[in-house]
Figure 1 (cartoon, rainbow, N blue to C red):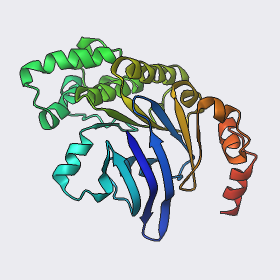
Figure 2 (figure 1 turned 180 degrees about the vertical axis):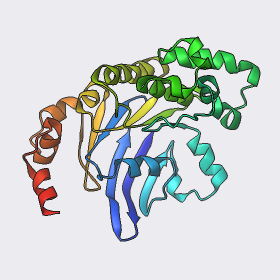
Figure 3 (figure 1 turned 60 degrees about the vertical axis):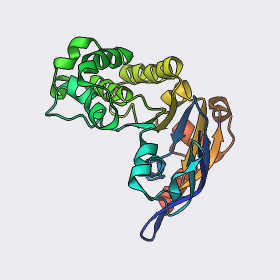
Length: 254
């Protein structure tokens, strides 16, 4: 569904992405791992045109979005995507229900009379009761905010969901609940998921495929089982969460 070829992205003299090559399989969950500053968030922003690539190509459903310069045409591509922000990005001045239906006004032709039905359906998909719709974001726990944010993404029925660090800031139990949600949505809706994360436990649980991004390049791509058995010293150190290894040596030299 998505193919990235020789993707480059620079900010001034700093090259963040260096010839990234990656295929995102339709209907599968692909996790992109990497440490802070490895280029994960930049990659996901390039996927939906929030950042313009310096070089290379990104094909979405056969269309190279790096060659599209019309905002109208780019907007049509972006509508295929749902983006779950790291902090949720709920609007504090709106109720949960208003947050969930926010995108419907601008991205769909769903009439307002259908909004209550959409709210109920999408909250149920993320394991929340209908009466949560009346609450304000300030009344929600961290885990509930993540789920409401996900319900808002689901309301516009995207083909691809991009998750930016979905378990960050959550306790282990809530992190596992979010992981189960990602698995359940793939099974129920058949969506394609791209998950940016450094949470190895979650990655091993939810991923069909994993890509390890290191210093702007994909250092390894494979199944969770292949990552568990890898002999690549950089990948192995990250998977094991060890302070001893080549990544540590690079940090000491920096």
